[in-house]
Image (cartoon, rainbow, N blue to C red):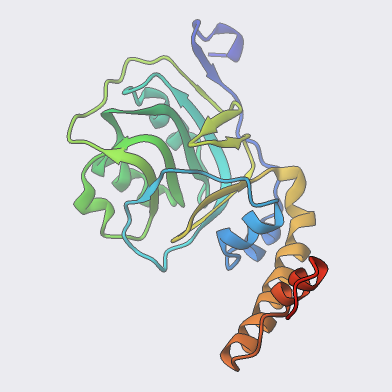
Length: 228
């Protein structure tokens, strides 16, 4: 079935493959907070919980986006079959918590297919299975109530997820602090910025360990005419 013959309310677009795998690998140890700082501190998801319960588990991979009818996961299954190892499924579920969009059986499939994780603006269920770790899952909330599989829905379209704009193929970073999506066109330029940011923070941290005043704030106070 071609895109032109999909019924109204459905869309299935090709996977976007615009990120160099080496560039993705270079971001695997980049904290979400560093990326957020370098992107202006006003980006990233809000209100999500890490249900994998592992503070050390990091998420880094290209986005496959899904927009669903609240409480329905038909097109999430389609996206999972489309995903390549290392991809991140990002779901616009309209922040609805009445029915879970993903659960333990889908986790098993995702692990087998090498999917890196899920970011869900909606609910999950089977929390004990997600808490086993090994695959990242961030969601708005949870419920025992399962989803329908009737559609409609769209795959690989621009979406909003928990206050975060996500385009197909963008780089998704997640850790204990939260989730950020970097537009694909900005990823290469962001890498030297986050590396420089990390070096600055390490210099500040060394001074903090030594008990030295933080020069960032003394300089700001001097600019305001405050005696320091």
